Image (cartoon, rainbow, N blue to C red; front, top):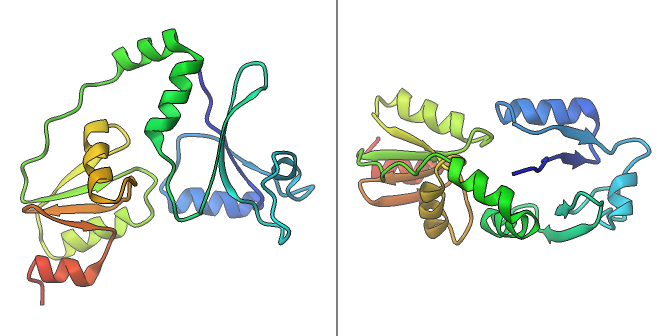
Length: 188
């Protein structure tokens, strides 16, 4: 689709760089709304009195008209399917071409241990290290590129695309919970 994703934060450039690095890279530009502090957030009415901003998503069309607003708790993940729906309504032809070009979903994995991740998940590297440290073979699935896998994770995680999520022989563990993993994997 003919869209551009931007991340805007009231944090400084060094802070944003460190955050992006902690996510092992992201695929969209990050912009700092640090000076004058929060000017963009204030214009979009999401700057709090304490100088921090709300977590918000905006879809702005080519004419600069705000077509969608989602202000949500920092611990909640946005509904990507809803965002795709709004974008589809704005540019149906581009959306159809984009959808046709997307790789088809891979079949559900059959490994005993499946790790569902995203490239920007800060806990996924720790989850990989944990599994490797204990010599546990696993299959990793990137839910950002496999929408069927993302749908499975949303079904397990109360509608959220929470990563890492583990499927261990049908036992689902949402988030990197060492105690639960130790128990299910029988690690002493």
